Image (cartoon, rainbow, N blue to C red; front, side, top):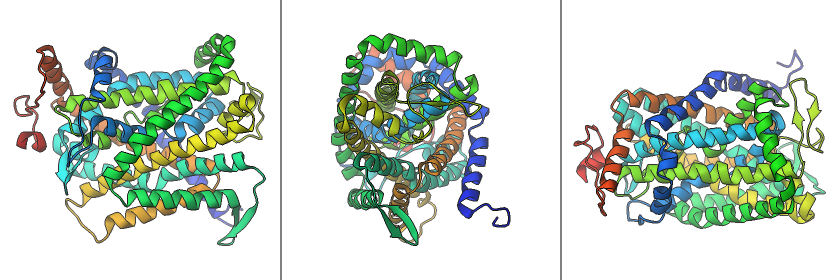
Length: 501
C-alpha cells in the first residue's frame, strides 16, 4: 500500500466505497421500492386507510412489567428514525442528488410505511420474553417463520456490527461537526499522536458520559428518556422550520415545483437523484431496514397489527414531517449546492468549500434568517436527534446479542458491546464526516438487503403479517373493545408468546 503512495486510511476508505458500490446497487434500490409497492397493494394501502387508527393507537396501550407502551415503542423507534439523517442526511441528498432527491425520499416514505407495517407486525407476532422483557426483531421472525436459523444468525451478527460499530459514528460525527461549526474558532489538541479538534474532543467525552449512564440502565431507562426527548425535539425543530418557511412563504410554491421538476430532470442525473433519495430515505426512516421491529416487539399490545400500524405512522413523522421541514429550510434559503456528474457545481448560493456530508446546509439555512442563533439551535437539536438515535442503536444491537445468547453465551457480552459502542461513538465524534457516512451506509444497506428479502420470502411462507391485519380489521369491524390474537386459528405457526398467552 505504501509503495503505491496510498495510506492505510485511504485504502480503508476506498474499500468501504467499493463495498458500498456493490451494496447500494440498482438492485437494492429496486428491491426497496418494489417491496413498498408490493405490500402497499397487498395491504390495500394500509398507510392511507388506517391513518386515523394509527393515531388512536398511539395512546391506547399501557406500559407493563414486561413491555413498554405503544407510545414508548414509537418513541424508541422514532429515536432511531429521527436522527442525523433528518438534518445532515437531507443535506447530503440535496448536495449529491439535487433537489429532486427530496421527491424520491417522499416516495420511499409513502411506500415504506406499508413495509414498516409488515416488518413491525412480524416483530410482534414472533416476540419472546427474555429475562423479564420482550425481545423480537428480524432474527426472531426469520428463524421462527422461515425456519432458517443460519439466515437469522447472519442478520443478527450484521446488525450487531452495524448498530454497534458502523452506524454510531455517523450520529456522533454530526454532533461533533455541528458543535464545531456553532462554537467556531476551534483549537487543536494532541490525541494519540494526532491533532484533533478541541471542541469535538470535549463533545465526544460529554456524549460518551451521558450515553454510558443511560445504556447501562437498560431498555426501560431508554424508553423513558426517549418518550420525553423525541416529541420535544421533533416538535421544536418542526416549529422552527415552519417559522422560516412562513417567513419565505411566497417562495414555497416555487420550491415545491423545483423539487418535483428536478425529480425527473435533475441537476445531478436521474439515476443519481433516485439513488440519493432512496438511500437517504431508507437511512432516515429505516423502513425495510429491519431496525423498527426491535422496538415494535418490545411493546405491550392486545394485537400484533396494532403496533405494526403505530410503526407505520413513525415513517410519516420522520420523512414527511421532519425531513421535509429540513429540505424546505435548505432550499427556500438557497443554502446549498449540487455536485453534478461532471463535478460541476450548480444551484443555491454556497460553494464546494462547505462540506455536503455534514449539518452545514441546515445550520447555514437557519443562520441566514436567525443569525448566529441558527447554528447553535441546529447543534442543540442535532445533539438530541443523534443522541436518541444512539440509544436506539444500542437497544437494537443488545436485542440481537440476546438472540445469539439463546444458543451461545460468552462472558460479559453486553458489557463488551457497551464499551465497543462507546469507543465507536467517541472515535466518530472526532473524525472526518465522509468515511463515517460511508460506513453507516454500508451498515444500513446490508441490513436492508437481508431484511427485505426475508419479509418478501415470508409472503410465500404463510403471509403472517397480512393474516394479522385481516384479523384485526375483522375484529375492529365487529366493534370489539378488547382485541385478541389466536395465531393457531389463523394458521400462523411458532408464535409461541401469543399461543401461551
